[in-house]
Length: 330
Image 1: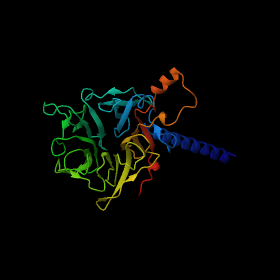
Image 2: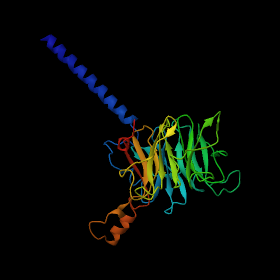
Image 3: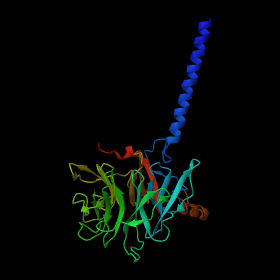
Image 4: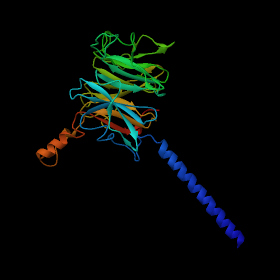
């Protein structure tokens, strides 16, 4: 009888310890989960943080800090000819109301990118260079300091040119990928890379005929190991005004780009491809909207205004989907 009592007590203690450990692990998992993580699979395009991040204005170009708790993105003019970098923080289980980033708000600033280690912040801007007004877009960079981001510094030549540069992304070895309409390209806008050698950028290399065409290529997202490249292009065989394509690097050469398909692309414009810091999600911007299908009934004037002033109005929103939806080659 006593032995059975002790055995029951021991089992109860073991069960309590097991439950405690499970709860502790679950709490740790919840705390370590990135704020952009979804509790359910995202197999279809989903508007990200609707109403706060993606709202009724034109939002695009998301860039997370490595811990996922801070998001920089763009608020754009409807004509997409002026851009401002804004920032939101994840606090108390929700994203904060965005604010203009401390270094933005005066000049046209766009295309934020934060390196995987969180040490560098790249963006493009029309701000003055050495006190002189700058008409084209240049790539700028800030270093992380103990007080936050340092002062923006123009990358200078040979990365920047007399033409425009945009959408800087950086691989794990420091190679910088970007777009430019500089002279000598294959078309009006081409994609380039500049290797980081001995503490400075080498002369940019055009990515070649497999990537660049007589049509426009923009916005290259490079995988950390440079195994694949996702970019935006306005090719006539696309589904919309601009589509996202992927190319793989095999033995130093790029494969023929593949359209990411109608789950990612639409009859509208797709742009700003980005993969979350944990590699689980694909983010991009789309100008798809409710205009592709008529409403079920005629709208009243208040209903019309509500629709025009909401997400999905065609101005551009940030979308999210599981990486598995891209069906990447191994």
